[in-house]
Image (cartoon, rainbow, N blue to C red; front, side, top):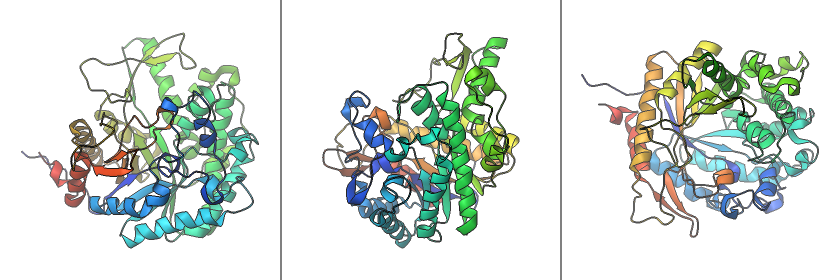
Length: 450
């Protein structure tokens, strides 16, 4: 019997990017520097010395890139707004040229029948705010609401789907605990404070939207299922800590108004006693939640692993991407069903999902052949469909990423794009995965049938 993978009527198909990864010209037209501008220009922090100074030059080429979206048949495009383009000092003075860039992008999308989906914060905090403590300063909730309100007033109506934050876990784990990402801090004491203020800011941004906005707002979390390496009590406990740290640390205060108890165990004396009233701010009604999924982790106990006392175990006889992530589509289904069970029947979007496999720096021919990436996409779309069959309220899917781009501190060598970018010439070339995804969109998934 043939399995049908046709998706529900109205299922929304899109692709995603973020500002610092593709725009280039980070200081153009009156923009202020971000923490990523600083980090990328700090010697030794970026692979190959790469920076976002040019990236994909989307700031100048956005009209051409919208035509690439149209060629795919995209129904939606998820992008982020660079806070310091709009408010160079993070608060106060508005840089109208920065607002105008996003206004032009939104108009171009709408003229081509593509629904804009705006993320307010995708990691590029204004450097001026970092100088005032950044995510360690409780005032940042109000700073964020001020910035958000500027964008709501400029774009709401034309933009009908907003997200406050993208992947706050990555901001704190990479930026405040391990130092691999901007702003490059390494402190067990700072990470919980930054995490808490991110969720306070998200809540304040949602409150601000309820006052002036008329459409939908949510928040985006990255999720990664954790499976124990054995049935030993130590591995099971380690898996539980890893799960709470990555999958519940941010969703719980946003959706349940509390933190999982494992965080006190993980951080010990570094875990603060947060004011109870803060959870009235973190827990705001959302219209949807975006979930980003790439891989899973099989976990074992390790008493020397900081701070979780847990480490991932590489699995034999399976495929790993260029970023060292296992291809494991069943985890996609598992995490959706877990999310519904824990948080209820909230409308969900896959706001990122994709894979980095090797592509040559210069494309050969009219189409770049990338069979491993196509296989990854096919498997994960099927897994997503299985979650819908199990009653998960999934509304749409945004592939990561539209373009090969700056993969943060990993530089330009890790390519996730549906379109290949030759960074020396800025030439865009479709990959075979782009052609396949266009068929998925055109048939609403029927091309997946087997």
